[in-house]
Length: 340
Ligand code: DGY
Image (cartoon, rainbow, N blue to C red; front, side):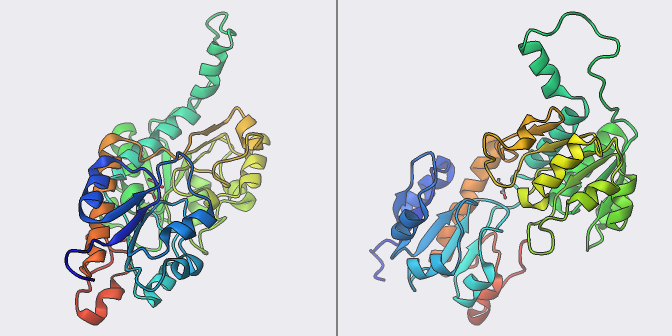
């Protein structure tokens, strides 16, 4: 490509200006500005001939996607920290760089996990609905009783950046004991939060609140099923701010409606979005919000900036600031440690 020709890129949704303007200044850019994602057919048409794509977690980035884009595709920059929508092994095999947006959404996501925890434990949505429905008649000594938080036990499944930030809130603010389950030991959690690394069964049995923060992959998909809910306390609250398919929706519904667990708070669902008549939405003890954990100004702007910089670095054949598959750079010596 000559130096005065700009790279062609497709941005699959209207991301914040903080990143969009960087991309538009450097590239021949097409942005999908509709509120809903493009159909698969249209997406494949739009990316044809592109050198880079700035994608969202709503796009399946797979062999079909790469074929439709063509051999010139150099980089896919995901506007998300998670990248379960991308077939990274296939991208790597084809020498396509993949970027993501860690760190800038850690606190916002942990805040949301904690918001869901306290909202579900104190039955806030139910209580607010009661008021809106005009049913608030008097102060009720036995009404709207929820759970205490102070001094309880939080079980963190996946003690990475976000799991740690959630544990820190629970430990520092509410004096909770911290249990965690992870394939890796988190020394900072052990020393700073007095956290105890345990097997999953122990965590499920001993935790008052279980908050999941793992990646979605073949091993973790469906890990919260009826067997797992059956091991939790009847007073337990389940929080999922990671990915919907980590829990089995029908099993969660069963556990919540039978009283096997007390409540759940979900920022993510399976499917996403849920159908209007999804049984989970009719349960008073299930709080569901529409995947908004990273929806703060600084997080979304930060994600946009990182995604833009990943895209431009990939187009220039340089190491991505937040690179999912740095092994792609091995041949030309610009490999770096994966940022996972
Ligand atoms: C992510 O970044 O993976 C979130 O799910 C969306 O912010």
